[in-house]
Image (cartoon, rainbow, N blue to C red; front, side, top):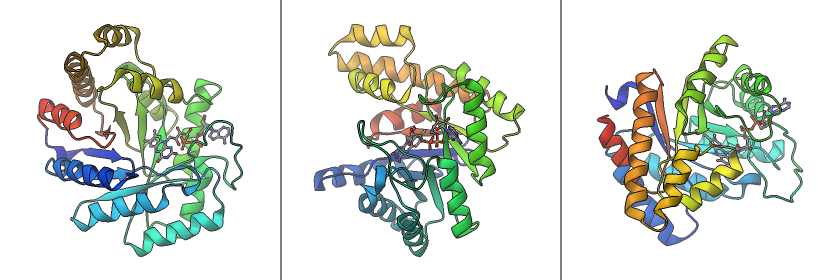
Length: 278
Ligand code: FAD
């Protein structure tokens, strides 16, 4: 299987310092050798990383690679969002990842959008078919979703509003993804659902992310990682085995591609890629 035949992508966050910018440049340049379909760059709530997101995307695009900015709507006004869309359009960007976003805890939402489906509808209304729009979905369910059926219904609203494809939150349980896709198909959702993949490099950071976003670290993985304590080499070796096996299973089962949460580092994602022989 060639990488070109499926939707492979790498996600970054906008760097905050000149050193971070240098490091990210080396990362995307290394990953570009793998010829993914696109790169994407996250966007802070309320537009807090607006410049960093756009600069990162423009730098990657200038080198001839496809790059999509994320855009989130929580705490944003329609006027600000429209301005941002116009900037993206004027820069020749035609690909977005559209999200609600999360506010730091304790801060109340003050924007004009409640859900990502409203953002997708707004983008379509304002810009027609200019953008390819990806949205997020959650095989292990979003922490604020009340019932499993609501998860599918709310995902469907984003697709009905005009999303072209979806990227999942990361997970380590392939069955959760496969069942979720089956249920989406049964509910009439036909867009590609690309698994989000989080390579394992640092246990305490992973545990923190997972607690916040509702992604489950299965007990057997958690206990193994905890047992390695500060032994970074063993964590890395075990993490690579587990995540490569997960990706193999997903691709064999028909996943339309993989989206790697790189955390701005090339080593783990490219090693998984090499092992998958993409
Ligand atoms: P929504 O689809 O709006 O869903 C949020 C919650 O509301 C869910 O529980 C959903 O079930 C519920 N809901 C939706 N519609 C309705 C409705 N009509 N009635 C009642 N309930 C409803 N965050 C960032 O801040 N910046 C990023 O760049 C970013 N990139 C991401 C990329 C990916 C691939 C993923 C998976 C997540 C990303 N996130 C990012 C995190 C994301 O913003 C959070 O997970 C956020 O909490 C939900 O965003 P959403 O777009 O899925 O929201």
